Image 1 (tube, one colour):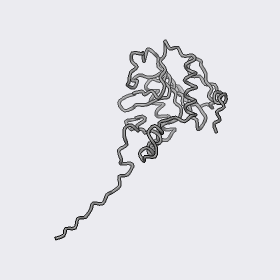
Image 2 (cartoon, one colour):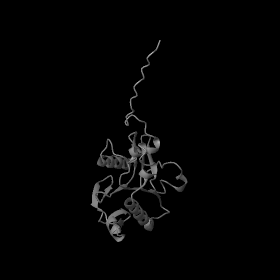
Image 3 (cartoon, one colour):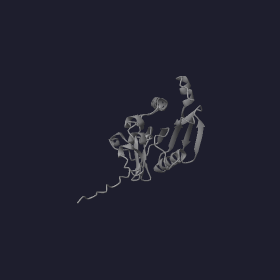
Image 4 (cartoon, helix red, strand yellow):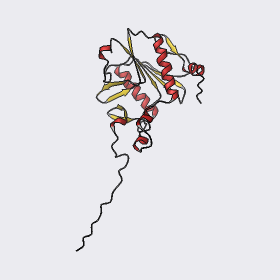
Length: 207
């Protein structure tokens, strides 16, 4: 007797239910993973992880300028400067990264620098653009949430450079101000940078 076997219908797994690999996590806020911008292209096989993690040439130029600017005046006996997305562990629900982080040596001495994220607050944090994929949060919401968490952690000043708007946002416990990047802006200890002037000097045109 022939037995008819009904084949189970295969239901495609939706992208929202598919497990996203941990290596695509850029940061964690409120216990929720935030993924690198472009992570969906990696999942789809359209790009590699290296392709979405890289900075644009404009972002890299600005980070270089600010790093070189800091190096000209920083007292290395008093401060440790970390670059290349140093991670900061705020608490068990929050891990973030920064483009540049300046630590007081009394807070992060050389003996505490290791292969792990720093778990103490930098004095100054510099961010150039947003490297995460925005889903539930808007870009403004993400900036303000991350800024608030860093300030609550003990960071004295957070500087955001936003290339699309060509502005610099400076946040402290007292106030948040936004300036055109053509203005002279104090980073610390009376030392002022000017991104617009630097870009013009290098012949970099931002449209």
